[in-house]
Image (cartoon, rainbow, N blue to C red; front, top):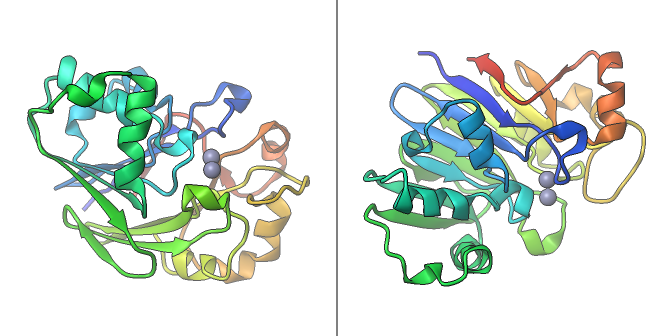
Length: 246
Ligand SMILES: [Zn+2]
Ligand SMILES: [Zn+2]
């Protein structure tokens, strides 16, 4: 069974290289879901001619705007223009249920009075236990990133394939478990050589390469320094619109 992965957005928080915020769309025979949905992700889907009504579930790694900030735009459009009728499931780290309405009201003041005509199920996922989300098996792992964003790495089993993603994180002891046996392991790689807290650079990935037992590795969330260096690295690097079939 083919699982199609589209990097609708492969950029960092600040649009380095003109790239859009993180949104990894996965289309499987029985389910369509997005891993992360940043502030620009609705624009990204529209640019790719992908109707957002087809998304059954949105899985959020953490609560930074470049990973969850587009959910409110999707919700507003689903209610006003796209006329969504099918259920939507949104699953993220602890506090997702409390956080998303605050984001929506901040961006679209007064919108709290609007009632969607479709069912919306928002789920807070504890780490290190598998969750059944619309038939997907989703397991999250503690990540090392801005603590208030409740950061996680994520492993999703869908149609017999495994897609794993570090989310935004420095290297953690859990990342080998996240990556193990994955058909696709997506790793953030914010910088090439520069070191910053709460993120990985390319040296971190090389240093731990032996521990990453995935079938395919793709680097994403690159800042400008890493974008300048991407032609010199052997790993695959994501770009907006990149499609991978598993
Ligand atoms: Zn980010
Ligand atoms: Zn982040």
